[in-house]
Image (cartoon, rainbow, N blue to C red; front, side, top):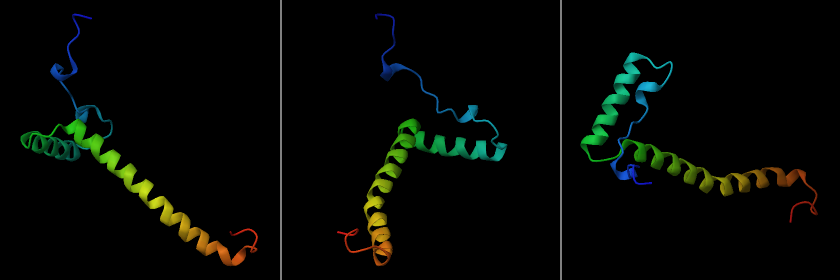
Length: 84
């Protein structure tokens, strides 16, 4: 559609001001953090997205170790046929 604005030209908001039940001090802290990111040339919404993705990667990387620890903890109580 000809009248649509490309994504790269649309204004962005981070939603900081629309969060319910946030104290004034916390809102000011978030504003300060957002402004610091903008000064560094970092898009705050992408920064938040990247942090969430990193947390997901960390969680996925942790699962094999947790599973192995659980198997080793349960192994003494299982029959030999159960644990292969």
